[in-house]
Image 1 (spheres, one colour):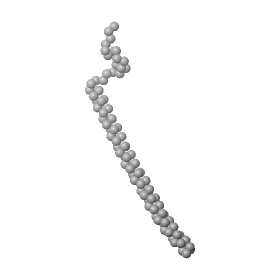
Image 2: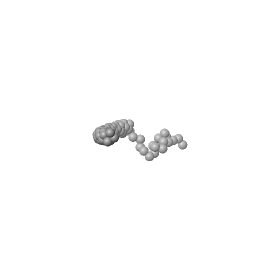
Image 3: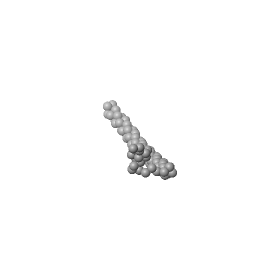
Image 4: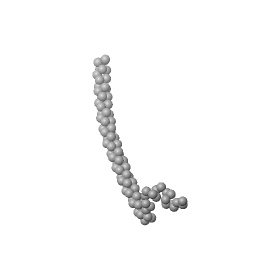
Length: 93
């Protein structure tokens, strides 16, 4: 009732043991595939970052335009206020 080491392992029954060169090729292919996936993921990340930067720059441009328009409106309203104060001041005299 002695059992061989290969028969005591549950994985040896269902999966044949790959040869050393096959294992090296498999590992190498796996590394290459992982490297390619990582390269693509890095590329996607960089593109998302560029897109986000462009979006933020566009939002900044719009906010600056709105700020400038509001400054113009404030300036115009201050001018109107000053003109009305002058009119009110003349009527009191």
